[in-house]
Length: 227
Image 1 (cartoon, rainbow, N blue to C red):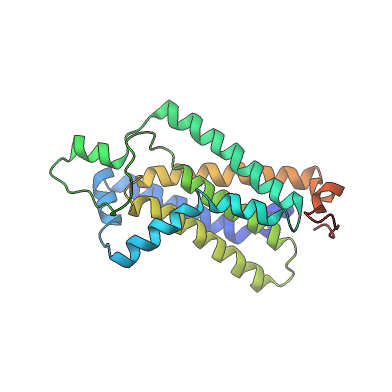
Image 2 (image 1 turned 135 degrees about the vertical axis):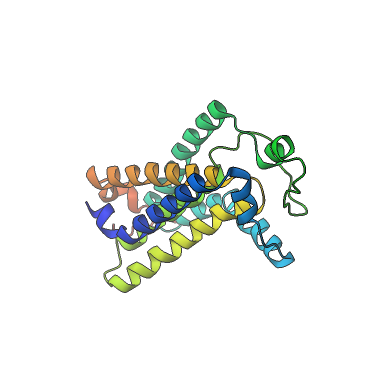
């Protein structure tokens, strides 16, 4: 299908990312891995990740709004992907109800000083999976799906996919850096965001939703050619 063909690199990089995390989780204890991933902190990085993680809080809404000025279909797909993935995340969070690093370290490794960033409000529960990571990967795959559909040059397409993967992976890491989540939470968020978004993109192709008249509507009323 076009979804798989046009986004092979993004999906491959995501699969490798997930497998790498899974391998680390199988070979390194939960606490040790978290500390290893937080081995280096610096004021500039603290500021960067504090701001970067906010993309999943507010940036997705801004992007949906901006896309309405281009194609309503693009905005709708991004919104639906995040809504559906977000609902799944919340269901799993409340079923698992896993403690966040702040609580887990206090209970299991009280002698260990947890790396934290000043100004970040630490959460206590509903750690698995990471909702922010889910959002980052949902945004990245939706945009990869939409942008690569109109790119003929393979190198340009590959560059777009690689950059969007990095965008999502950095977003996932920001949750560990800020000690809001464990690596396992990031893995769960990555899988949920990617799988649900991939299914929605495949359904869009299968039912030719992106050829519907409303897909190309935009704020301002002008029509744009469908992709």
